[in-house]
Amino acid sequence: MTAAVQLRNLRKVYDGAPPITALDGITLDMAAGTIYGLLGPNGAGKTTAIGICTTKVRATGGAATVAGLDVAHDAVAVRRQVGVASQAITLDRSCTVAENLYYHCRYFGLAAADSRDRAATLLERFLIADRRDAMPNQLSGGLAQRVQLARAIAHRPSVLFLDEPTAGLDPQSRLALWDLVATLRGEGLTVVLTTHYMEEADRLCERVAVVDHGRILAEGTPAELKRDSGGTAVVDVALGDREAARAALDGVSGVSEVHDTERGLRILVSADGGGVPRVVSRIAEHHLTDLKVVEPSLETVFIRLTGRDLRE
Image 1 (tube, rainbow, N blue to C red):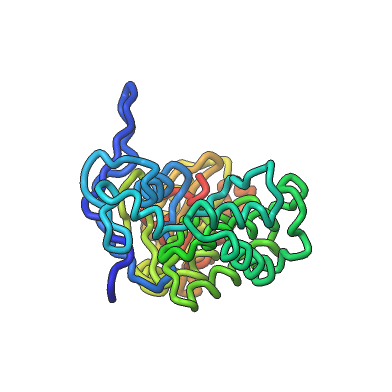
Image 2: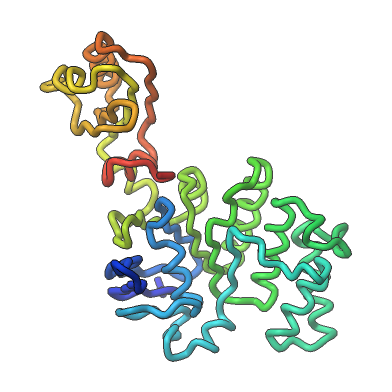
């Protein structure tokens, strides 16, 4: 499939004492007409990658192309091909909902009549026509994000970048936004989504790259990544005698890794139906106060790769 976004050995180092490496040579191909997810914790490098692709951040090294255009040498052309909606609400607070859409179209060169028609179409499509005269500060978080999404596609871009668009939204608003994104993908738009919500990536994305510390740790379809995790379950335990519990786990069948946590231990164990009970029986006598089991998911893929939660 044709790549809508290509990253080649992309690097970004921010000046400072010491310098901060946000991207450490990542290479990715994101196919046209798909939803591609960049999955990782805060500070992983996801937003920096989006910033480079949308010409807001200049790379230190490597190359990036969007819709076949080099982001460094064809920045103006790239901006016409991309739409962006981020976690932060960036609507013009001095304009109504309808005006935000209208002036966005005008900014990208549409005639006045065409801009009015496009704005009216988007208001109906995104179910915000009844709020056309509302000001941004009168909208709920979910409605404001819906307006941002409508504005992001108003000039008909070929690639839509969504940078953690559902962070902080209530579950109902999040599900509604998922449906809108899936509809846009069904119409042929390429969507690049950054998120630290595992369910969001699993439900929406055809392919996912797991990112941490500016590097690609794994890449593939959600099903491939979960399969490659080896059916691992994660057992988080809070207990009083960490070292004794760690020693008790030596030789327990199915235990692959044991990591220290703030409250106790994180144990990666085979999810074969017997692994978790074997672990619990071994550590129960070591002042066990709490236990949480996470079944195989994209979250367990990340924990297996890094030993920490996606939200850390």
